Image 1 (tube, rainbow over the protein chains, first blue to last red):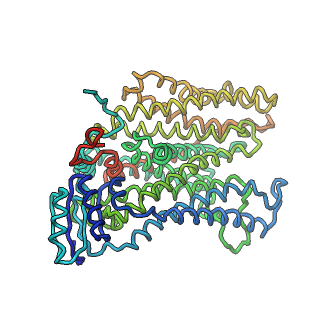
Image 2: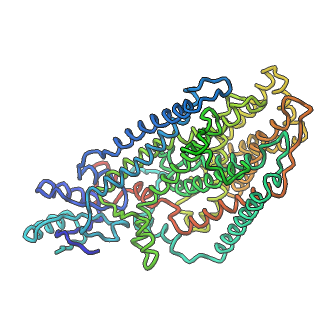
Length: 169
Length: 454
């Protein structure tokens, strides 16, 4: 993969070593790390320390939009061509609960997926190195840094048990 | 030294072994048997398409519709396939929220089954409506007729429920697949790398991706959980909201949901018992998983047992002649064989699963799963047709006479479902790589205070 962001890429085989390295890197001012892992890992997540994802807000607002849209659609369309069916009122709210419910789920789910795509894209990974071992059994830590900082970063990563360290540009 | 028993719900492989074993199911050369299976499914799909084309040309006269039975094999098969879909979402979403670790090994296959079963089910209302080319009139859109659909009709609720279910279950499947497709991308070459690269949507497993993905997956599961319970409830209301004897029951929603999950797990067993051997993943999908699936089958089968008994009890207790006659004729009328097939295959056969020897014997489990599939199709056949056959006026009573077009479309639906599933399991990870890995403790440099890796 072509890389353009200068920095150091480390492979870890041990999760505690990677988590310790991340914590120390953050403490020494390297905030813009990229950590790769084949599976979601709570220990790494805690070490990275990012705030909770705002995906939930997308889900909530889309769900609320869905329930409003479902009821509005059914009420407006029933009123637009008022036909008495089975002696029920034109606006028969209990009948419309299913429509409101289904659109809550539909809007909420689609917005959740869109949120992952949009929010993930907001942090560009372009130019950052990647290795196929990161989808297998290695944890990757990429530290963007200047050439004069690279030696110290490499030493820190190796000190925490990195099994492979490469310097990019 | 304390001996710690191995938890059978936890995988024993390393991360690298999981990647290797699951990828082998995709990268290994397809066998002759695979091509025979694929060819058979493609042939049955062609039978389905051919028969539907004839039905389009000739009209519903080709199907066995005659008053008073104007809902028959197609609606039966629609409910059957929607029901099959329910086990997938139960296992993938509901058991995810309950943090049941054993679901991880089997959920991908069941989720794929859900999507393909709902895709199959969705064909049937369209086939059934007669003028199939204007099926889109069901969708509320601004039109030249200045008409809107009737939102008080359960049939329209069903349109919303099924289309939402198809969209959300497909989304849930695809979202779960993204990290696994990325793993495949990283281990194949040539055109496959390009294809899986495009399908992985740029996934690298970076922390900025996991941060949003893991939360999103939780919310999707939380949304899919009430959805799965609602969909078969809405399907049941297609019947229960009418005042036809045998349909107008308040227990219909929970009765249908339990039946749907029961039938879905039956199909999971039918598919997974041979598949795990073919794909050589017996060490990942173990007897322990089948034992748990059997317990779920027993649980839902027992609910069905109760529901069947309650239907007959309520018919007797209601004092309504029409209800009583309908249920009497279910058991002793001209279609008694269908009524008893449903009760024996579902209520009684499922009770065999109380015995651990049967639950852990895959041959007996496979045979039971076939009975479940048959029994659940008959259940819907009995519910749909027997009530219509014995309406309020004995003068108008009739019997169903399914035609070759009914049977070929039913048979072809298995081909359509099977074709998608056969293509899926050879081209996508049938076991969820990243979720299995999430359950395996990663190697540690330091021994933690409570001994070993946590």
